Image (cartoon, rainbow, N blue to C red; front, side, top):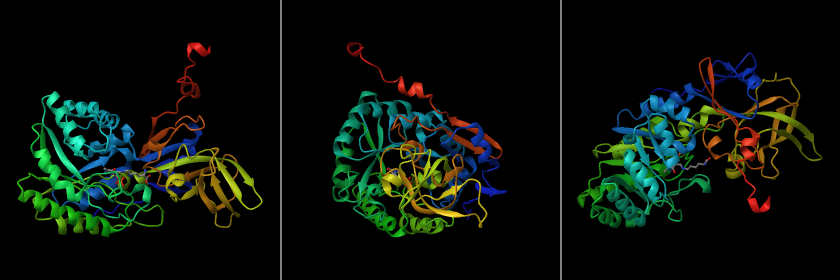
Length: 427
Ligand code: LLP
């Protein structure tokens, strides 16, 4: 078993490094806040996942939505990863990273006609179809460009993924997939459409799943469905099991679901079914491969709380505000244990009370200009950022060994403002 290493962000002589590079040094040339990714960490998490699946006929489609920087996609595509995309934008990013259309899976509940045409023309491994109107529209799109669209139907197995309610997708009340009891009917419809070719079944029950049981329950339901579909003559070659593998958001802990337990569960359910198992992980690969680096603006002492106001805000990183997510926050220059500590709420500069990264953290006393790292920010960080409060999107950097590169630069403030125009009748 290849163990995922956790040593890509480590303290050396009391200074946090990304691989071989001092983050303190990097911050001298790149203004905070910025995201920093470790190519080694991306490679390690990808390799350990692929290795754990080696006894299964499998293929991996990295979920681009979790971190879609083209350089990140490039690291993974060089290792052989396929991509799971949900928009033409993500599709084109994957292509720019060098991924052929045949290694791209198109997911998403609201694909447009134009998106279907783009993927059909440029090449696609499969569409994960989520509704009856979508299957008709895809048939039409494919006939327009004289192609046959490869399709897996996304089935909603009505399973509670036991995760945050905003990121569970496999319950009957969620908008995703086709209810499992209607699935066979939809396969019948698809079978009779000339420009559709059925290749498999798809599901994705949620994200940041930390227990094996919901996966198991959902996969057992799907295996049963596959037997039944095959009995009715449908050509089910693949099962796409989605993403969702949880990670640890605490530096001190390992994976909540050990990979060997996940792969042996897969083997016990799908082994011997002559199926290709496709997996669409996002967070598992990118989550612990990135940090958000920020600087202290002020330490504000209040009557009941102290506030450490930092230059990253909820617009740059929304997970704590949106999902009550807890991320480790660590000063970049480590304090000696004897350094005085203080209880603080670490907050951003945005004019919203939800702009809080952590409440009641006990941290060494930090002063204006001191640097702090927000951990596990590689997934659903930069991709979910906005320009709220007219704050340009923050830069992204990647390191590999002793090399570091900016992979997205910070837009100039005037580029941001000048996108707006005053109409002639207001001049
Ligand atoms: N496949 C499909 C169809 C998905 O919808 C998703 C994520 C994935 C794969 C990848 O899931 P992962 O392996 O990363 O769990 N913004 C939220 C997470 C939203 C996940 C959306 N779908 C967060 O920050 O927790």
